[in-house]
Image (cartoon, rainbow, N blue to C red; front, top):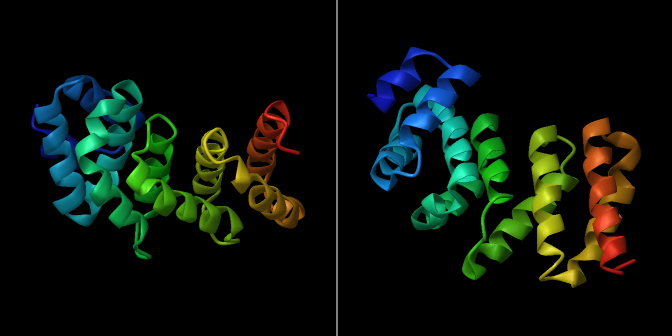
Length: 175
């Protein structure tokens, strides 16, 4: 399969699934997808994001060599929503290297507090912060404060994910 041609052909769940299946756990094929994700044309980058997050969900170790570039993308303000959404999605499936945890945590906090952030980005950010609670229980008061401030202004999806975070914190006796 020519990954670039497949991305250019169509953008659908079925097509993303075909690309994901083709790549499997193959680091070389994943490297080609990542090259397109980082260097491709706008539409190719957007379309590569979905199979990228699917591949990482199935094989988390594939993303390890790309953390620096991924975190760099999160610092940009001109990201296509699909790119940011799929980066945040894949972060819930991987062990985030210690050197990138602060940057990723900051991005998550900024996202959940931003009224203009996409709801999926907020939901995935809440999930990543929920995972960080195990290592950094001291972040809970800030998470709780943002949830309380945003509660009435947010969607049911945000509130549902926020409830899960609060339940996790209660189980860990962080309240």
